Structures are given as C-alpha cells and as structure tokens.
Amino acid sequence: MLTAAVSVALTAAGVAVAGLRAYRRRFLSATRWFAVALLPLGLYLTGLFPVARTIGDELADWATKLVLDPRVWTGIVLLGVSAGLLATTRWVGRRGAAAVGSESRPAAAGPAPARPAVAPAAGTPAAGPAPKRAEEAAGAERGRAGKAGKQGKAGKPGKSDSGLDEFADIEEILRRRGL
Image (cartoon, rainbow, N blue to C red; front, top):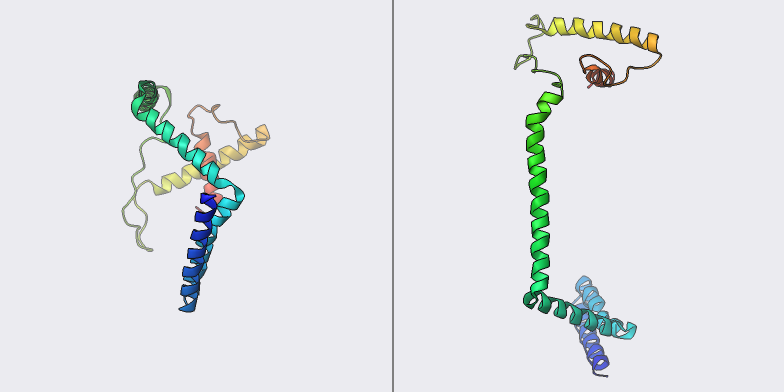
C-alpha cells in the first residue's frame, strides 16, 4: 500500500512540474518531465517494484560475499591467473613466430626496390630499374598467359618454386582495377 501511495505521489509531482514547464512554453522540457513522471506509476502497475527489490537484494548479497567470502576471492585470483597465462602465451607465441617463422617461410617479396622520392618531370627519362620492371611485368604476363592456356586455369598457390605467384595474381588484379 505504501508503494502505491509513493508511486502516485511521485507521478503527480512530476506531472505538476511538467505542467509548469508547459505553462512557461518550454514544451520539450515539459514532455521530458511528463515522460519521467509516468515511470513510477507504470512500474507499480506492472508489478516491477518487487522484481527490482529482489534484484537489489541479490546484488547486495553478492557484494557482501565478494567482500567477505574467501572462496569468491580465490575464484577472482584464478580468473586473473588464467587471463595472465593466456596473454603471456599469446605474447610468447608471437615473439617466437617472428624468430622461427623467418626460417620456415620464404620472404614475401624481398627488399623493396629503390624508388625516387619525387616523380621525374614529364620530359625527363625515368632513372633506375623502372624499365626493367616493365619488361619483367610483360614477361610475367606472357608466362601467365601461356600457363593459363596449358592448364586451363590459374596455377594453385604453393606449387611454384619462388612462392611469388600469389603476389603476381594480386598485382594483376590491382593493375586491372587501376590501383
């Protein structure tokens, strides 16, 4: 009975404040006050106050056990140790893969080719390995075209000697798209 009286009183007070805000032509604020004012009576009529009380009691019991029960602290310590071990093994695995992985896997593309920092002017010939790379790309295109004609489909990755066929295919796709 007390819960009903408090809920109705809170709703009435909220509606009164909403009415004052509307009287002062602050309709957005009045609407917010009215929406909040409807909550206590709505919670009472739906029977959610006892549920909220039960939830509050259970949370209080859990918090009391958290502070006073050594079994809960043992569980927290075990969770922390587990998280620490998982993080450590991941870190060590990554670190070990960097050292050991270089022996077992071939280098992806080798060292990066030397490129000028600034593009040459329109009338200036390009210096360095650029013409050679264009010839290599044309040779690779002919080689792929011949290979595709013989096999009927593109070669499978991992079957080549150099391990760079995957990158050549990716390069070809990027070239077609203008990237």
